[in-house]
Length: 357
Image (cartoon, rainbow, N blue to C red):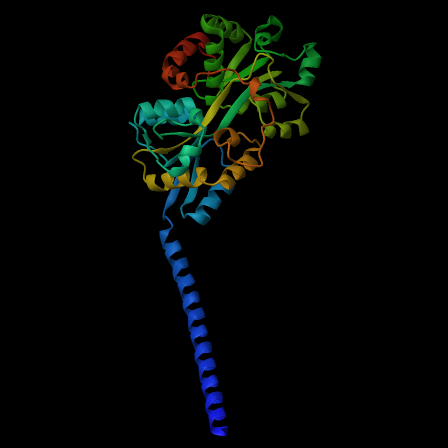
């Protein structure tokens, strides 16, 4: 009996020891598997540099996140959409960057027509609003820019002027020499103004711009120039993009934002991969990464201080527009690209030598 007990005890010890050894082996195998998976994930990361043609370097945190998760680090080249397009045409479509991030969609439409862009297909593209992407996936929108006025209250008070409330108000004789606007041939934001008002006013549109031109001394190069110069006291009224970044100007100058009563022009802000670029694959990877995760688009909203990306992907939760969409002018976005050259030819003939300061 004692021998049987001793045998059973020995057998139990053996079984327990075997079980512990097996468990330890499984844990080791599990750790090894995880390490191997990590190595595989790292090996999947893309290499090299992602050159980004952008309107601002403020997007760095977004591209740092991309670099951490996907691989390529970003290098920025700052240009307006009009400058990018002109450079592409002058250099036979050879791009200086891999990715085009931001700027008026009219330039992207023109670039597609000239075969300067690469097609980018990915699953999440189907979730994006059809009006804000190319039907063949050559360009996409990261948001929209809306346009209104910024006014310097000190200058208006000094000159006994009231702030304009509408686009029609800007043509009043009392505002002669008091208005600044960026050149629409360079600034996608202000091209949107010209195109939208021409669509709204029809044949009377060019008469309107002829009157407005009489009140403008010169046309600046960048979309940000009007707000900066109005805040600096150089001019009373600026035609400008409207978002929360303008609130910073209120800290240093007595300026106000005006939402025109007769509607706000708007333009989608493009994103695209350049064709024949050094690292087209990295550009395509960024586009898929960016639009496939709502958190990436939320980070962009935080950087830009506006929630326009919710128009692009309505499935994004936790973001709301800070204006009523009914304030937007009714625009046929397909005309932004197709009529661009014709409109700008007429525009240049209209303004003469006022461009470029």
